[in-house]
Image (cartoon, rainbow, N blue to C red; front, top):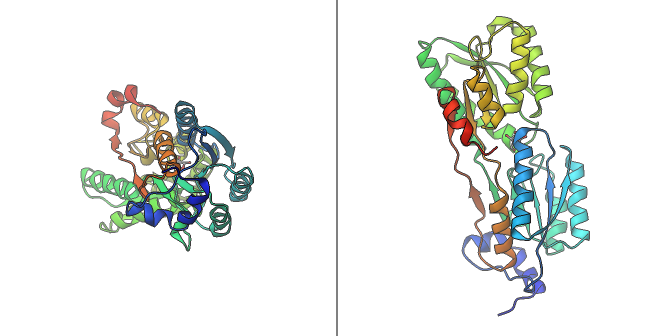
Length: 325
Ligand code: AHR
């Protein structure tokens, strides 16, 4: 049966739920190259650069016409980009939301225009889950838990002594910042000797990570035993601040961060970072597959999670040459 774009409309309202139970979503007309409008968060980190490269390369390989917009870490820019994709009548809208809330209106506009929406990397909190068809990304709460579990082990190795932790949070209101904080807090709560003494956003950037770590060092000095950074870039910025303060990162202050980018592996090889928790940015191929399935009327999973590992410093030299980002 050839399914027209119009017939997709009737299904779109419940696309996520229907796809989850295997009810196909009707397809676009055959032989028409797929057009995806993609709104990216920005270029704030090494992770994001790798994510953008993955999406662009996968689109090229799949013969997808990609309309790419960089939101420079601003939600209003993403809303504008999504509205422009709706006006251009793209086949699929995909985006990685800067923050979790505030999407209902624009996603209802996409739904009214019968354009399916796929979330990549970060989730949204919306009143109606049928406003998007699928979410492809990591489990950020689990990443925070992994960081916490590594710290419990580290504390055992240190003889179970009390540890004062400073936390560099990601962008306020973003899913990874909220979830990584939650997962980490859940695990360290099992050991009353582990205390977060300062916690502030560094907006996922090296520059802010450095700036905030400087302020932590100024107010807490040698009280700080551990830095937990919600991403590697902030940890790398903080490493600079720690060195400039005359301390040894990775030794005087243990550092646990998230992403697993090459820069973190290099810092581990130099003994300046203790562990990185992987967050895989290579989402492009999965995004293309899901988008093609949606327009072909095939069932798609509402939630696609990504398998990830934990890399402590002692494996860094061996693993570094194999890293893809
Ligand atoms: O949403 C994923 C996070 O965003 C990555 O951990 C971080 O590096 C990026 O900026």
